Image 1 (cartoon, rainbow, N blue to C red):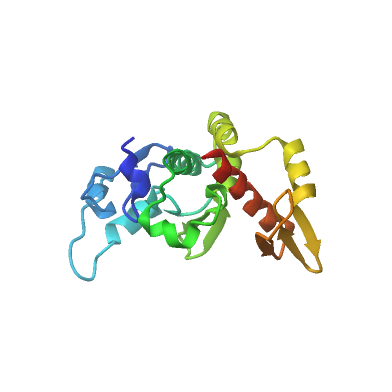
Image 2 (tube, rainbow, N blue to C red):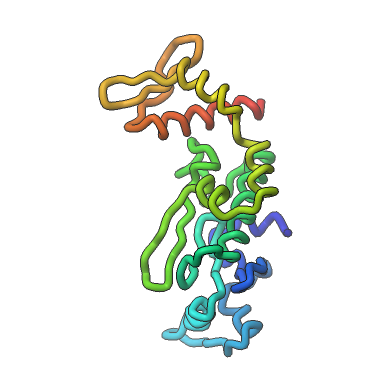
Length: 209
């Protein structure tokens, strides 16, 4: 797949009801491709996006970006979300290897682990279901994809427990992250899970240098 697809903030791809991932061309938008689904293109000021809405109702999933997908509804064993999980996994691994986030993610997420990035699942009824990249990958991704992400990002669970004991401290109703050898506080969080995410981000950053 062309790596540029990972960096698009809109019009990234379609996913068929069977789970086939179809990246869009460089200058294409979602409506441009819907004629391939047997849908006549709709052109006009008041019809913008209508063909895409019809495609979504037919079971196609519209991937706007690495962090956004629109589908009719979430099904039990959903091949569309499996394809999305693979896309997200490939993207965050690409960011990890290149040390470069897309411009539209840099400011908001530069302090987050890629695994903590929120992925929005926009449903046909207007609801938005949101999960982290980690939750999407490990809920819907195939085993091979999960194993690849673990190899790049995950630490041994015993090491995690050791790091938590050494670097995360409870302070009243909050959790603080400190360097293992002591020193200035690195961050304060409302939950241990949030503190752990910062800890993982620190360890991932160290592994790059």
